[in-house]
Length: 62
Image (tube, rainbow, N blue to C red; front, side, top):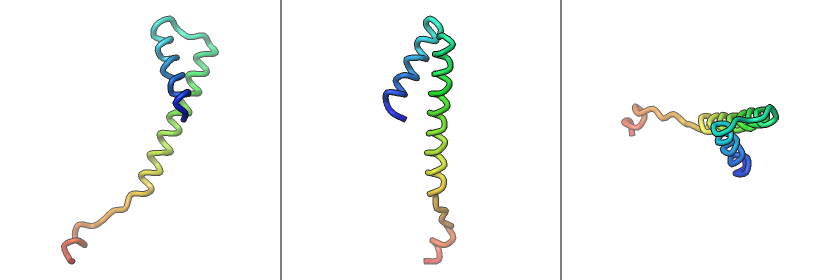
């Protein structure tokens, strides 16, 4: 996700708290948040897929 999109999420969140959003802005906010979450989940999955477990008992045999 680009910095511009993250900035837009934050801008919409501020506007929502201060004065409310139009229906179009609410849709945009939902889409941007969904895209952000998708990226976070993909990143986490990638990190978890690259974890290698090492058995401590194997270290003691050396």
